[in-house]
Amino acid sequence: MRTVAVVLAGGTGLRLGLGAPKQLAAVGGRPILARAIEAFESAPDIDEVIVVMAAGHVPEAEVIAEPYAKVRRVIEGGSTRTESTLRALAALEHEPGDARVLFHDAARPFVDARIIAECVATLEREEAVAVAVPSSDTVVVVEGDRVAEMPRRDSLRRFQTPQGFRLAVIRAAYERALADPGFAERPPTDDCGVVHRYLPETPIRVVPGSEQNIKITHPVDLLIAEQIIARQAEQLTAGETGRVSAAESGRGSAG
Ligand SMILES: Nc1ccn([C@@H]2O[C@H](COP(=O)(O)OP(=O)(O)OP(=O)(O)O)[C@@H](O)[C@H]2O)c(=O)n1
Ligand SMILES: C[C@](O)(CO)[C@H](O)COP(=O)(O)O
Image (tube, rainbow, N blue to C red; front, side, top):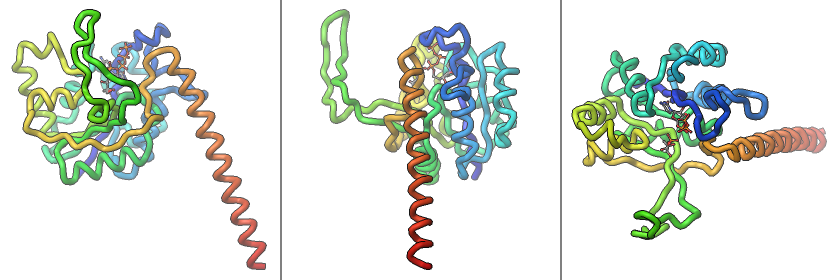
């Protein structure tokens, strides 16, 4: 069964305010989009990667995607996230219904191998999977400027991506969504939201995300991203030094 990763890069990054799509900006010297693609390129369970790029920026995305063998298509996105997903689904029209598809925000460049592997493994036995972390803030529902509800924090999670589905499920959910005149007016904020609203009987399994799997959204997130990259580099160096010392001590004891 094939698994396709869709890297959603169709946004323009208004909240970051760089004047260009944020996924083209570099963190740690490399474009955010390249980092997101790289995570799926190096995941053994992923067969193909489709990049959905913001209108007018497809050639730049093609240049970024060029080194990655699994990226065989860079397509133009729509004006909303759900429209970008729909374009990816159209590009996947020849895939069988039991194929697996993972939708990932290009704006989350630090998704790791464990998360991707758990999503793919979950889709072997389930029809939909989401990635989430607990909330460390108390989250409230407000009406106007008044608190209306205070849900129990221990039941709350913050969604990340990827969000994965059997193709037949996400196709059916969008088919129902498109038949609903209210969908365009109030679209869900993600693909799990489309499945939850239009196929409520479909269970969505949740696997643990990571605090590093941030969505670069506001300017402060660029600073956090640089810190994550610096820490990853330190950990790599420490790991390599550790391996060298272990090898050296091994040689010492053997000889
Ligand atoms: N029409 C759109 C809008 C968003 N996305 C993608 O969905 C992910 C999450 O969206 P968000 O963080 O909101 O990105 P932007 O839409 O670029 O940001 P903003 O809302 O600040 O403009 C991003 O990787 C973005 O590129 C997309 O593929 N197509
Ligand atoms: C899909 C998502 O990243 C889950 O948290 C989020 O809903 C995307 O929202 P955005 O407003 O498009 O960034």
